[in-house]
Image (cartoon, rainbow, N blue to C red; front, side, top):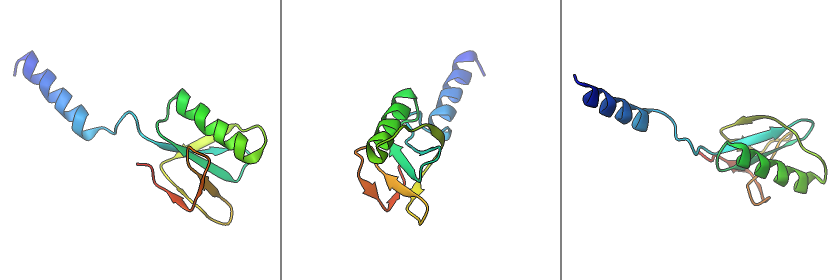
Length: 92
């Protein structure tokens, strides 16, 4: 195989087998009983999720982790990027 074939194969594998870069995430917050799900996982997404948390809780929010979904329970409430409470959010 020449270099062009190897490059094309690597591009095909990375395009189809690796997860998308704009993956949505649900962020949890220290000391809060909510998760906020937004599109993306970069700094802008983290800031957007933090802003929704602060609006909903009327307090300061600090991200403690993230996951691929949120399901409402007795201990967790789920919010979308608009600040609307949802029973289940699976953004992937």
